Image (cartoon, rainbow, N blue to C red; front, side):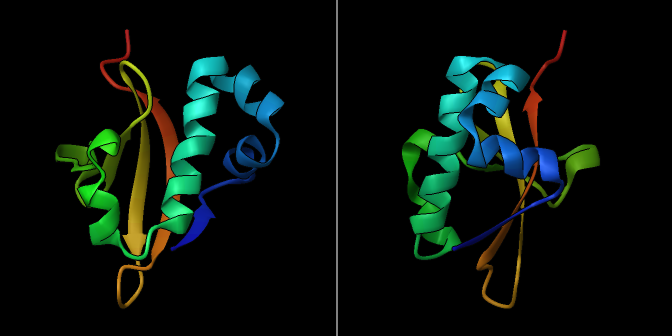
Length: 100
């Protein structure tokens, strides 16, 4: 699958691990890169959703049309899926679910 990023910061965090560590800490940074690599090698969105470790789920409310993928604990990767055959994933943000 093709991966795009909503902004340059998210792309830099994928390309340079130290940027991701600075933004979210080591554990979340590692999972962020790992999840994006999994998205890139997935054949299609259905395959991505079938990977139990990702816990990919459709979001509701203000985030209707977006999907959440588990990173660690309360942290999740927020994505949208585009394209005629749902082959383009856009990384929207890294969010701390139930932010305190």
